[in-house]
Length: 326
Image 1: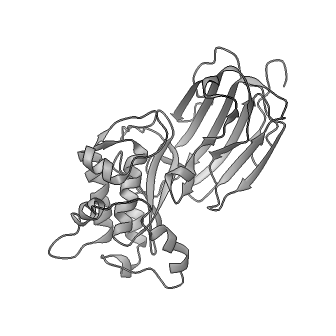
Image 2: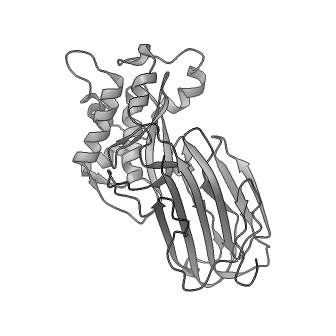
């Protein structure tokens, strides 16, 4: 049960002062049996005029920020810091809790759960050539039983071992068929491929966004920013997390923040500005994660000092005071 600290900085720079539109943040994880949130702080510069917290349609905790219409700024900085303890399930738990009726493909969900998982069982991306279907069927043995956990684990390892991880700065997620054609992608591309392949076999799947940390036994890739993976709903075992980028199963080294039906719904920070396209200068995102009991803060050095706090109420959210104010 490692103690994990996360510092997530998002900084927008503009060529001239602009008016900020509403921003939506999905940066705060939910307390659960596998994650205990000890502390969360959020600072925003310039401070918003108003803020409010809400749960989205998936139950994620989101923060909505609004600035005064007359305010103009040439920069926006949002800094989220988390201190938590992680209790990953580990691969042995799904095997111990999986409903015997779901141990072999194909299986069906209990009748009372079908209305709740049916939308997550539907394919969400076009695949006119059925490339994803054909790829998923590779993991179903021609003879003998297709054991559910073995099929999903093999699918995860195949992406991890046979595809090239290639970081991409542009927003959006490429279609799974394109990932199969190129043999390369980002963590969100691999997560979507895993989801659509699982859905093609009749499973309900979700997109998961959050953070990734290294441990003494596991070295990972994709942890320099927010990370993405998939979760598959299995009767008895519940939502089992699969990280095809790193070949990890059942939440190992993964800090879950948001769960959604599609990648587009899981943006950690979303918003805009009123101005021309030429007003935008740059976007810088930096995520730093540390593991252990060292109470020192994590995150990059700030040349311009800490951000001014915004008025961000909410459970377990503390204000970060600027220099000279305690």
